Length: 368
Image 1 (tube, helix red, strand yellow):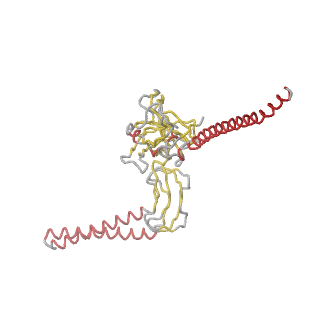
Image 2 (cartoon, helix red, strand yellow):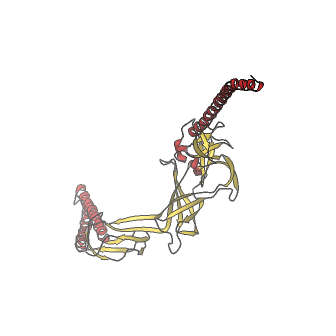
Image 3 (cartoon, rainbow, N blue to C red):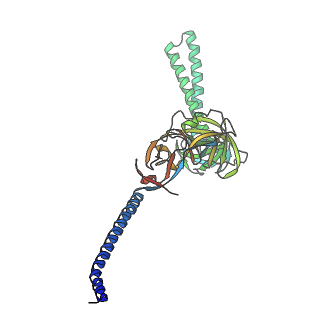
């Protein structure tokens, strides 16, 4: 065997060993790659799971802001006086002297009721009274001479008194046939026409006095503490945005309503054209004592409160991106900002949207 043949023989014997070694190396490399990919997939799955567990929210920072402490409250204008004018007697309407929209003054005759029978009754009552005067005078003179007893004189005096009372009542009934206004104002509604039959209590007119109006608003407890009766308040009407009216506080409720707000009434003098009308929407602007000066006030956005400001609850964001439902004490309202009196500190982060999905301790992710 030649040297060349011997070399080829060795090469043939070595090939299986080489192939086996290469196969083992490939298997080990594949297993290592699979293991690495599995670990990477686990890490990515954990990140996704962690992200999916966090609830997406928006946030804001509690901070001090310089705010002018003027505040406003909306309400409805009401007439200074309002009267549903009823009939005092029964009868048929003869004349009506006013229409809807007519301005009337105290004592002005608005309508007349038929009084023929009442005048007959009045004549009878007057005659009875005159007779009672004459009879009583006769008994008075007779008693001085002993012609009548004391009891007879007392009966005569009683009859005179009764006759006088009946005449006065008759005069009142006759007077009531002339229906007269008891307040100044405008006839808002007329319920009767000539020929209408009325009874005691039948509504005939609605009269409103809008020379002055009352604006009824509500304020919270922190605001009501600074108000005083007689204090001047700036008032605006929604239909006249460029006009400003001056009013005075005439009533401050001593008891809060169901929403823990205090009703306040402001009287406003109307202009000569009665520009303001009852039922219009108005706004009272309560100025602070330091008018024009802004104050640093700790505030939070109105939208941060769970179920509205009245709940007094917000979600505070912790350093580990969990949330804590926190009770706070609120003060004045400045547009979309709410004064924070207690419960929050400056620079704390709070949730402003997404509260509906949160419970105490939830993990959150703040939207960018």
